[in-house]
Length: 585
Image 1 (spheres, helix red, strand yellow):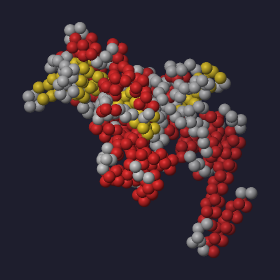
Image 2 (tube, rainbow, N blue to C red):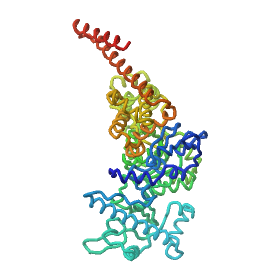
Image 3 (cartoon, rainbow, N blue to C red):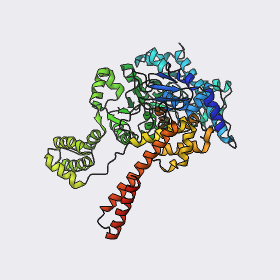
Image 4 (cartoon, rainbow, N blue to C red):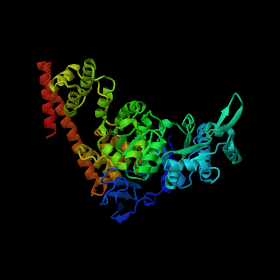
């Protein structure tokens, strides 16, 4: 959603960056900036800076930067829209009323009503659980499962009494319409009987919270042997299980090295009870791209710990590439004897879980293990078919990985290592399922230690233009927009050239994606070193022109190596190279 310019200006003005950042970390003045140890990546020496005059932050350690919007996105793990909404709530600003957008406003208000109803329901379920009479059976069940008071409180566990309409009466009494409650998943309407009743009855309740803390839906578990064991909120205007992860909200203010992905509510809670407190659940076995992107906002590494049965293992295989393609490092924890995580830690405790985690398989190692299950290795034909399939897969990997995995195949099948390698070469390798990780913003950024010199030159030019509008005028006269290779800096320069003195760096960065905001805000690295911005801009432009010319000459020299070049064409290329070299002396 694009926010009106004037409204966004007011939002940034009211949410002064020093005030917002100070809610998370103590800032200390040094020079024209304020400094702190970075709250985004953790450090002992302060490298996190805030520029009050520019209303921007920048970390020289992890290279995160931007406006107060990007800061809130990182700290709270929110999308751009959610961060804007968070800041608007902070200063009691209404979200803008878009022209000809009444339907969007109506939908927004309707979703807010459903979330409020869910919140009321969650409070009601907690109250019922705590009631000595109403929640007696739920309390006894929780005790049998080892759910302590601290666990019940942390996860907001409640109880839906075994009545048909107690929640309906409560919420209708608070002014909620039946239609809202049915569409929100709290009530069920039976059309054949034309009756409406509570969706959850006689079950333990697990609220499902979004990353921003909104109650979006519920999971409900029986306390006996009835079927189905779980009933979950279906798709509603505010909830879709594809877009959420159970338990993720609890980690929004934590700095984590990794997260453990499990299947269900009780797996998360069972691991927590055993001391493994960084688990989240996929709310079903089919991992989605949306969930992978949520994880990417929190960590760089994910351990998959699905149930040991066939359904859990098959679901794991489907989800691995989704995580990998989002740039996450993936490891697989394999549980013995078809146990699920909750069952395993009840027997072996956190120590046993940590041992399994330490020995977790890489993505490709797990795929090979999963592949074995499709073949009978006790049968000669089965061993041969497995070896061919496995060799084709291994041939698509990097050479170092191939060496390791060919040895594993040899151990399983008894075939000679040379024969397996030859089979891999003959197969040509199957199409690799690996893709380059997408460069997405995340709380833990990889520090760029191999920065291109050209990026530094272009960033310094932009910094000079930010420092002094005269440098922008000079660069415009030199047609600098034709020299940039970095598209973020090119667009930034064009905006400065077009807007002149009205250009606001904070506002401009505030509307960028997280990745582009990091790139754009990196100009704050160079600004303090400016003594003469126009001279700095001239030097940068001179070097950019020289670099571009060197690339053109290199391209012409590469043409000389083409075997199909005629003598006339070769002479023309040589002449152009000579002229370019002379012109640049």
